[in-house]
Image 1 (tube, rainbow, N blue to C red):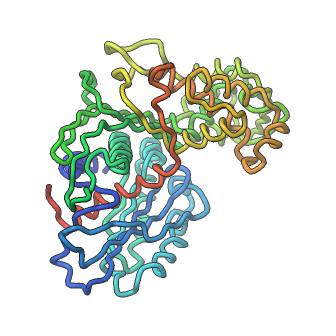
Image 2: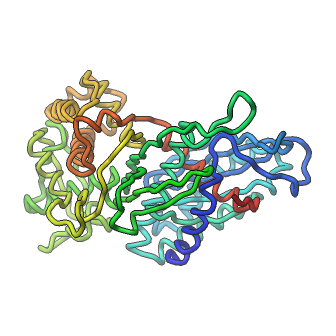
Image 3: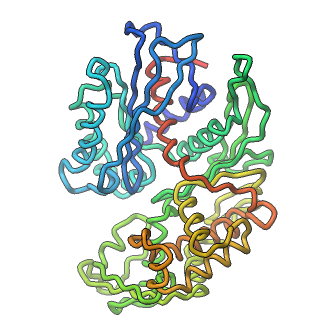
Length: 456
């Protein structure tokens, strides 16, 4: 099922990328016999840790062939991503109910049957599809049935590939920055002739890097050529599954358990001193990202594991570095894990969890974090704090305070040793908050374009 989906989306993405737009989009509505009001569309962005719903609208009586697509409302239900409801019959579908009920209220009743709705799932469902294709299909079927119980125009539910997710983020970033095209004061679309920026995304289960390169991309699976608004772009894009924030934290703890030997207690150098948590051992090795690290000795998934923070930066750095593989490369050069990557060039925008990590480091340490040296200094400062010291500085972050040291050190290793950002290129990274919320725009617009049969 997943294989068939990839064959369908690759050519579709190449054809339709040239006409994607985030804020201004030409949408033909001749076939929609509706009064001059608004049309609506719904996207359910099913991430690894949560699902978000976005409702968009545009004028049905667009003037001069241009419809302005704007966000109408949004909804963020409680609970985890749809992949977290495996084994709980009906739960994945029910998790969408509060948002779909809201959509019933936010969209005029007369427009319900004309409103396209689509669910796009990312790395969390990619992981589930690896560990259990049957359960993955069941979850998609379940959420599909739930959506279809509402009077909207259901357009499907699918799992995006890592390449698609990375490229969509890149398109989103550069359209928002008007690097492709902008509407001029003379009332015409203009090409600003700007350089594009690369995209750095850090989700719960994967991380993506995408940028334009003039160098040869030696691994064909990481190469994507796009033609947007009359210009050709040669992209390098790669998605690292199991390198998202949640999975990295789980892999790190699994690594500590296996290297220290399971005695019921583990010293965690990335957790702040004074922090202690107890969990079931099975919750640590229930992911495709950690299953290979499952202890071979009398493993009992119900056994209790006590994790005690020690707050030691150097030990944290050493253990996180061991999550990566920098040892061999089948190409002329690699980032890590035998993955080819050309040298980074130009400006980049880092978003999703990268933004929150960067912001936390700035606000708690007072360090601007605009160079690799400052990133290391800030991470060192955070990692050497006790949990009580962190609570004083950032009480609003209490539920996640214990994770910021590991996340900061991981970002340092990924950016500098992995991707190759240095004292010259690192300052060209801009950390932004809202881009992750706008990836749903691309999900929606791609399927809206399919629905309305637009061709470039």
